[in-house]
Image: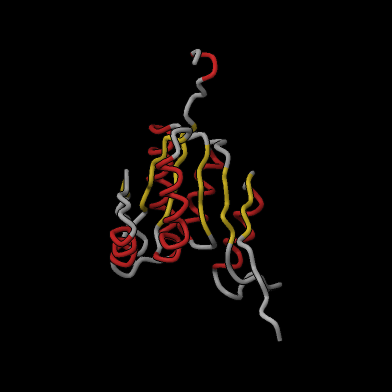
Length: 164
């Protein structure tokens, strides 16, 4: 095989901070980590530290980087600001070519926004309830809509309605 046929690896950063994100992204993380085409970094914000760590242990996933943002009585503003600041410097260091987020959490929104600010393409594995009210469910509906506006790749979860 000639060197010209070898494709360079794609640097992918997967950001998660909550148990639902970890559960839904675990198979994606495992697949990308075993794909030679990808150099995958798993970034943990620590939004829900203990619950995320349980899931990561179950799936044998280790975070490459941990922002450790968890603080007692943290607010959505705290989570967003600490995630944005930590991800800004980490993205500058890692230079990912794509940032993958899942769902409608504050971590997903902050990661997408941090990537957008650095002009890094965003891949959004979408999930969650869709309503016509950005305050219901709060803040998830707004997060989901905002992420969708700045993402380049959209992966919708397949939904099969049950027979009535």
